[in-house]
Image 1 (cartoon, rainbow over the protein chains, first blue to last red):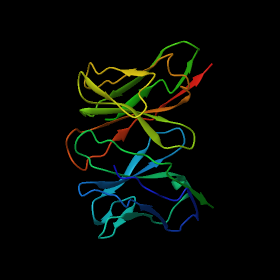
Image 2: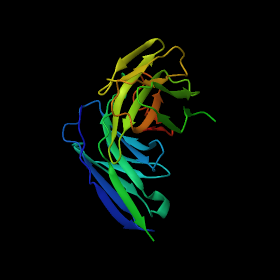
Image 3: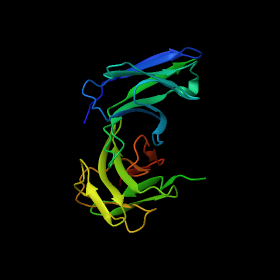
Length: 111
Length: 114
């Protein structure tokens, strides 16, 4: 199971773009990269998922280089409500889908 | 609305007491999971179930038990054998066997010791 490494914390200001990079050197061929957002006392919420290249949805973009050993979650024009913990996970979603959650990245957005 | 409902939101346990946390989903998902989260930490897998009447231990199953008698329900019992049960407990579910389908989480139960 591939482990991930991401910054413990980041600070930003309202209206800025935030990029959180995650390293996953041992990613397997059939692994997907998934990002979750978690607010205090709530369950993690799915943000975005990708396998290679770039994925974009209404909330974020996910950039994955050709070697897939890292990925970058991009949050455009953050607001105070984006203050949360962001988790990068790597795993195959077939089977029972065991996910490994690290400590995540605590993003603080300031006025 | 489809989703995962965990209850209660807050729960207190006395010494030597077993307590049961409820998790119900109406997403028609086959697989269900229980995680434990300690302050400032990520989630750790306690138990998971891929199908009714079947479940497997996760990484930290000692002191916990589960049942899966119905597809939509996966209750977790924290037994008196779990010596450090104070934590935030999260239930999740997903469509089984399909690639690129993520887990969906409930909003958790916070368990504390009296």
